Image (cartoon, rainbow, N blue to C red; front, side):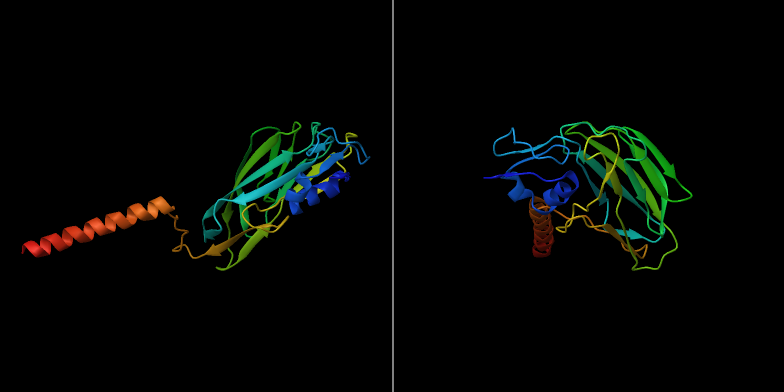
Length: 222
């Protein structure tokens, strides 16, 4: 395989779009300049490269209900993404969602309950991650409304102490690349039912069969 060299902001999109093919290449990024890959058959990213996912706890939310989002920021680079001037992450909720609470595993989180947005600043070590959790309530929006948005990530792709590179969160539950996270507003009488695994379905079928056999046995005794 030939070596590949990409600038950090292009690499972020390439890794999301073609994770398999790139994993089979020798690829290295260092401040946007070509460098020989030190890891045969692998990927070596020297400067910070921060990507993120945003997943909703449910794809539907009832009128007057709330939804919990889990945001994970990952630094795929070897160098630490330092806490540079400005924010490293910003999430502005769409109209119809009201910020209720937010927390982060590290760094400084600044929620704005009047603007329904949150700002996070902090460092992410090379190969490390930060998890941000937020809960939002559904405001006065019509049933059937689809509420979608993406968080914005700011990182130092060339390692000079300034967050000049940007990326957006991706919804990991869909096959699309770099897509927004969506939830649909439904009547409060409709909730998302939990699903059963294969073993769960088998056990449920056995319980139904046992119940039917008991009813049949009682009828025979009469």
